Image (tube, rainbow, N blue to C red; front, side, top):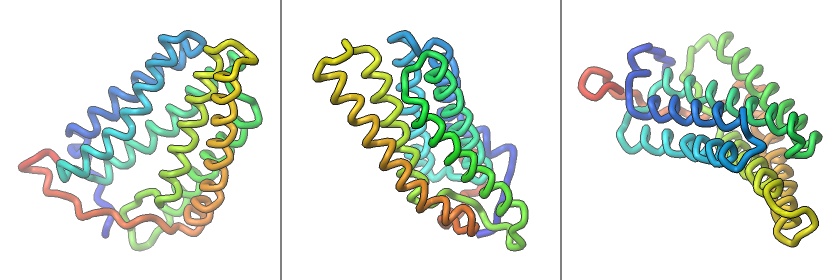
Length: 199
């Protein structure tokens, strides 16, 4: 399917959800050392799941919306990672590994997207989606652990889940990086005409 980026496609419900979720993540990341900040971040990351679901259900998928979602994802993860680094909430090797993975994938996507002679619509491979989900679980687990008494069973379980999810995210990252570097993306569903339903 050919790429079709239209600014008016941003004026739709899924992209509004993306914007609100991104704002929630940014606000929470600034105070991620507090329970309230963590709750805002968790709500914002949950919104990242909702926007894609709504886009598919309402048949409002678009290239512009997909780009907005990816940019919000990457910048949101960056904001969360910076906050966690600053307040020593997640292990630094985990944060560095995630940052390197996201930078590589974003760079490869941009490079291959710009040089693609067929101007194909770009959607992340399923491994990339799973990797992002695992990263979210990892960071949220470490955030929960930071609210628990160190050395308790609950804290150990939360941190163990954080490490396990980070490892899963890295594994999915290796698979998705291969696709990104080769310019292999999931096929986009046909875009809906924007006139009747803003999509």
